[in-house]
Figure 1: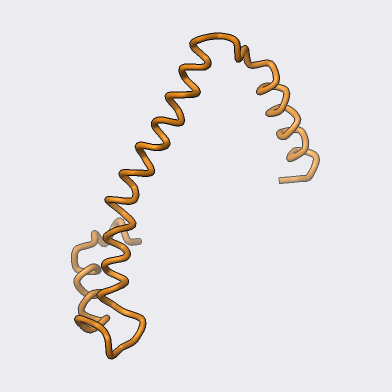
Figure 2: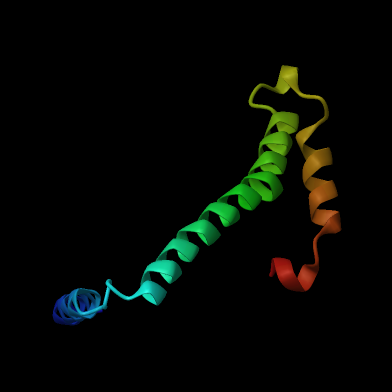
Length: 88
């Protein structure tokens, strides 16, 4: 993307946000709802993605002497459960 298009996009975004009627109750409620949805997403993302990822990383371990199982076992199990068409 060329620099002038980036500048134009930035200026148009600023002008668009400047003219949003923030006094409107519907706009205020929608902004609050957006932040509430972001909070809900963050909570679910931590529970469903980050906790299992940290567990897998802990199982694989940074030191080879402190692992619960071999790294190849974890990777082959994860690879065996994945779909080939999805993994690429």
